[in-house]
Image (cartoon, rainbow, N blue to C red; front, top):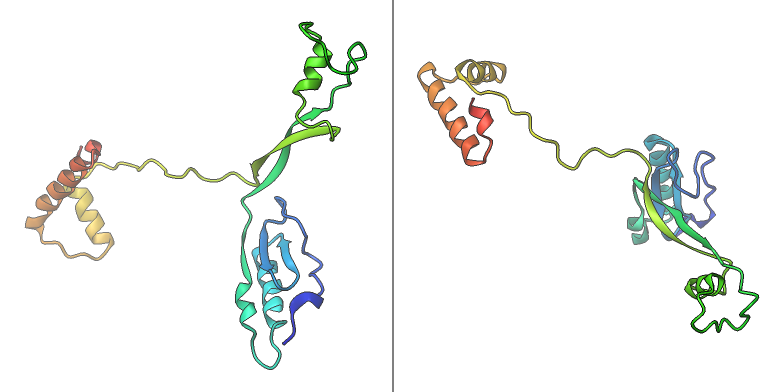
Length: 181
């Protein structure tokens, strides 16, 4: 069995996601994750990664390969520089004195670092709303007839009014009172 560790990364790939390289595949036992600008470039590279596992049969490890689309990355935020120690109170023992430099020094979370920060997720592209409001269309005799005709449904004429009432009743039970207007 051969592994994909010796595979040469595709020239169009990147080691990190970005808004230009959000399509990826991951081969945990091979060359890790690769990011691409297009779905087709990702798919072609992924096929090469899968083929690299073929040697005297398939290794079950090939099933660890997966692909997807990155929707978010992480960005640094809330950067705080380490404050300068107070010259008047080198031991930071300022007692009841409201020394702003000492207070800032005491509030800094970790003096081993010159700066500290947080990180937040950032969307790579605008995503659609999770649920769009339904478009409510008035339901009447003519609307039911045109829908039936458009879909090749043969509804007897004497049943159309019954269907309109059923739709209105169903809409009123879900709270969509406007559907039946």
